[in-house]
Amino acid sequence: MSVGFWKEYKSAPDIFTETMTVDSNWSESKIMEIAGEMLIEKAPVSCKSDVYINGNGYSLKSTYGANSALVNHTNRIGFERVCRETGADIAVLDSIIDNYWKLRESGDIREDVSNSDPASPFQGYKEYFRPILEYFLFVGSGSRRSKNPADYILEFGDPFDNTKWKIITKREAIDVFWPKLVFSMRSKKGMPPNYDLDYRGPDASSIAKWVRNCRGEYKGALHIRVAEGRRRRY
Image (cartoon, rainbow, N blue to C red; front, side, top):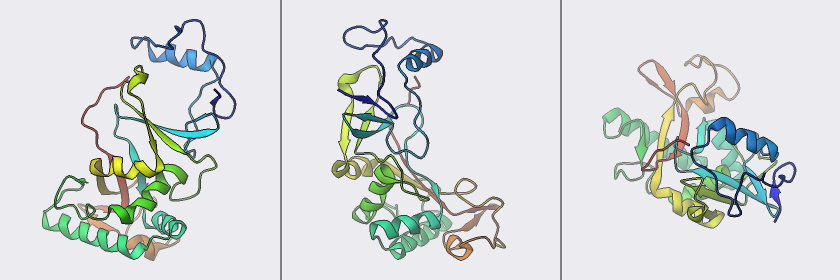
């Protein structure tokens, strides 16, 4: 088996047992020290794959700690690009976002709206979002295609219990994550710096289509994350 990223990882040091178990009481610094010995390091942000196993790229998703983001704060420009690449009609998403703001302004939904909420304006659009979310999960971001796309997702809870690791294919991914998704429109991250209604930067008219002023903050970046029931940090 070949496991690595830019280069194949070195064999595990003697501190591991034959079953490759890890002591969950190890400190973060000890784990980092051992990872360094094996040439394991964090993949660049632009990479969709965190590790390659036998030539296939895997994106690692933890169900503990912070909620996993499928789409980090991305304004309309990023979604326009992804829609062009996937063949999705941006006008459909514009309509969904318009409905989101109407429901927010009427008080029927909050900033974060889950697909488990019957009032969610996103809930009935799984097949529309399928190619878009597959792109963000496996191919690239709102700004570019990744040089290291992923073929699979490796989802885990307790990282020390490999019997419960789950491999998710592209075909399965959206069906697995869809019921758990939470959508929200955010400010700052994903928006041009110091954005206001007088913004005249590149593609200003496109960005403005999604923007609303909420208590002095201009929100226009769509964030999509997976909400898991449990939280624990390792």
